[in-house]
Length: 306
Image 1 (cartoon, rainbow, N blue to C red):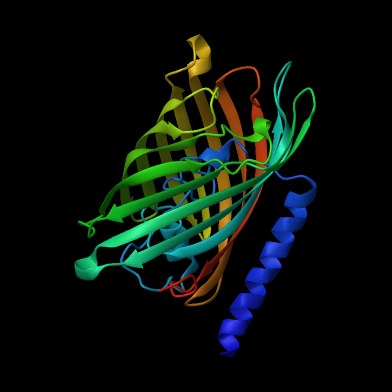
Image 2: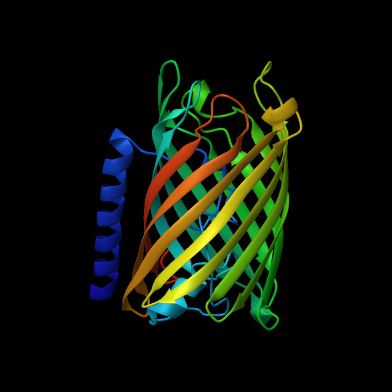
């Protein structure tokens, strides 16, 4: 009971810290769709995060290096709650602003070593164009059916979706979007790689709102440095079939560095930073550079439902 109260207390502290950052000036809206910046491969998709992992573990390992590798696997079976703050800076008509993205990843174990892994991204934005937009952006949700691991290989298929939760028109598409996705991971010693392919279509939305058809490719490579440190590079490339010319492509490249600190077999935190450059911005209203900080809590797999 005491251990459970300590876990809840720690998470409340993290939530308050993240909320304070988000409330005034959060960042990472571009991630809201999902990249590999804090573990986003599986997310509703596809928006900014890095995950890796010991796929069969019911509890996160106590060893910081093993856990850091697990948090780099897009199909890791580890429950995490994280907050990522991103600052965006553009040029000319580029976007300036902050986004604080809250992410929850929850695995559900199935018989014969199968599993379902869910990921939910909740971004809160303060975005500056010609005027200021403040509020909640669209919620991204993804769920993957993950096969039993084969040697160092991991695979899963599922769905990725976007729910129209934006409180302002400038913060979301206002459409219901969903589609299939497939994820693959490979891990060997200190090296972790992951790939996610997805396709989303508009299923519904207000009359007069532009429909969307998007393809997504997320990829990441990470390397363990020892003592719980991990570095990596990732992308959350998107192609908008409804746009024209260079506006169709959004190609961010993210470099990240983080460290895992463990407290027990089922309690740990991950602290890290990242820098993102947009090789192609998908239009004039996108940031060219982003910098970010993330803070995540690893908890017992029984913390969010069983």
